Image 1: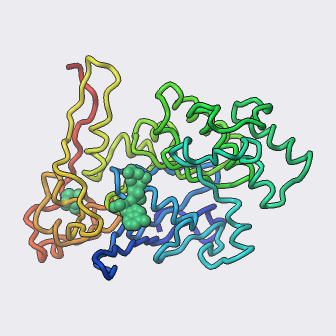
Image 2 (image 1 turned 180 degrees about the vertical axis):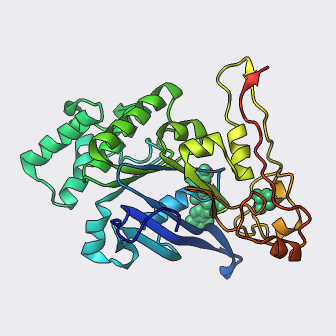
Amino acid sequence: MTGNQSAADPPPLLEVRNLVKHFPVHTGLLGRKTAVVRAVDGVSFAISAGETLGVVGESGCGKTTLGRAILRLIEPTSGEILVEGADFRAVRGKKLRAMRRHLQIVFQDPFSSLNPRMTIGDAVREGIVIHRLAEGAEADRRVRHLLEEVGLHGEIANRYPHEFSGGQRQRIGIARALAVQPQFIVCDEPVSALDVSVQAQVVNLLLDLQRDRRLAYLFISHDLRVVEQVATRVAVMYLGRVVELATADALYREPLMPYSQALLSAIPVPDPVTRRERIVLSGDVPSPANPPTGCHFHPRCHHPGRDAACARISPPLEEKAPGHWVACIKQPPTTVPWDVQLQHGATNPPSRYLPDLTAIRA
Ligand SMILES: Nc1ncnc2c1ncn2[C@@H]1O[C@H](COP(=O)(O)OP(=O)(O)OP(=O)(O)O)[C@@H](O)[C@H]1O
Ligand code: SF4
Ligand SMILES: [Mg+2]
């Protein structure tokens, strides 16, 4: 359990426990299953109302699969998804539809996420009708109000998606998600396809809506600067696993997992006369169909204490400081005792490593 919940607390809005999504890979003429892509491989966390959990990591680490598996847009292989304590994976039919209303998604690509043959008004109205939240003139009024809430004119309801820019379409996508009054929205790279000048406007819109409606977001992005602006806590993913989970403040100030350190060191410094030490990650992300043994990150790790045990022990996600969870057996404290590390070929005792990532004048 990666939180500080006591037995008396109400359950969190959303909790995932040991969520797994494996994709079988079929090759050859007979289409036999030859491998398994471990896209999401045992992820656990909780999100409260009004909170944003940022999810970061390189391409292919499982962010989108995680978001979709939580919403059951793809069925998870195993694990639990609890919505206000209720087992979301157990529901079917009408009950599934009713619960799904509270869990929505905003997609990365505002150009393909809207049906080109549907008017903006019909796109926003669709969920209202399906979930029987309103009809007739009341539904029209809600659509207009939603469009205005996301910063568009209510009169655009009769127009079609091709008439709008990427930023406007993303606002329409947000209005569509909001129409069914959700409590939780997966935002999968919601601003990555937008011009930088438009990104800030859409991020501010999401923050305003969150404040007004106490929405919870799972905010997926490979842009750590955007995540820093929006996230309360951040989960860093590597090859299907969460390798660090901390408040945004703790993660950006004191990243403990060497992978997070490398990601943060790569954030461009806005001031051209300053620079920061860059930890260059060697090689590409390994395939999730054939991840390295032990700590998946060991072939690329720069921690000075890395040794043979790193290739043999799978590091548990453990609480190194209150609320700061890290999967690394070389960052103290660790629950993996030194004698166990020795049995697995360790030569370097755990010793804290924190690179200086402050930007300095070049
Ligand atoms: N339907 C599928 N069948 C087989 N493999 C899949 C499928 N969907 C995703 N994968 C694989 O699962 C892994 C995780 O993919 P995913 O799209 O979740 O990553 P991501 O972190 O969202 O990447 P990006 O930053 O590029 O969006 C990748 O190796 C991907 O190729
Ligand atoms: S467990 Fe070892 S290889 Fe993995 S991040 Fe820590 S030091 Fe690096
Ligand atoms: Mg993705």
